[in-house]
Length: 384
Image 1: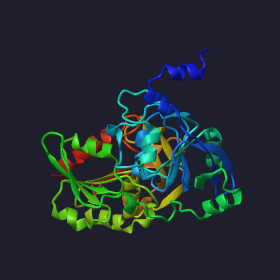
Image 2 (image 1 turned 30 degrees about the vertical axis):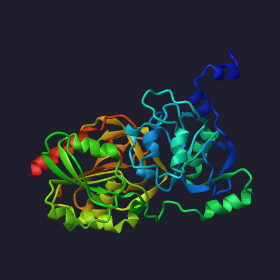
Image 3 (image 1 turned 60 degrees about the vertical axis):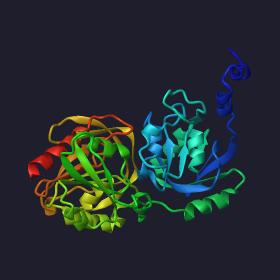
């Protein structure tokens, strides 16, 4: 076996520089006092957030740039992260909003022809902490047992007592509105691919780019609005349908978005994804609750209760909608999570509104649920 030194001599200078990552001994400290040792491979700064794990085996760039992770640190269960680098086409948000990226093995040299920079370079530019050499299997098991909780990443030199105190004082997601951190500041138009046959208003609670691509690819001209936009603003534009996006934080804190949905419900066809699903639930009288450790990954089985078919889905949420009862006036469950049997989709047929807890645009993930965008278009057609 060739020595690492001889191997490095045969690599281009640029790649050798990529391999020269300076590691800083660090530690991940939970509010419970549990501590895991690791090495920071980016510019180290104290960071905090609710820690969740993601089981996707690919697509870390899309995960990093998903606005729904605002206020959270993400532990990747797949061990090798960094091997596909970063490219400008696969961004799901304008920048990363999560607090930190945690992994077992950081791969400094990209082996993807589309890559334009390394993961470290991108994280450093955006002041996002990356920490490797963690026992991610043990971390995942701990979160599954204890539930998602607040944590901090600090240099190894910080005392355990001080780090635990920082974790206990840090912000979580329960009772927190993170949406106004990620929503667009101004209204904008996302053009249709080809002829614009439908006009759709998008309430941006942290919308992923691939959702916009999917709708634009179905001949939708999209009018994207800040999350606190009044319903009448959208109704005055006389759109054909309304879409409520994914996003971060606690849905119960978003009174302005719930009021928006109540204002358009029954007047325009409506489709919601993830946080949009939770907000629709709240608008029709259901309650939301915090899941123990959430659903984060690209391999969650969902059953469509109308067709009986099972879809493998991409998911990213920490809250869920309660089971509707007869008192909720015709709200039906359309999809169910087969891992824990939670509600994964609801429909309000009378008001021509439906939503799902998962991500049919799947970036990253499988495309089993892409038909839901087509269902939205059919609903718009039927309402004309």
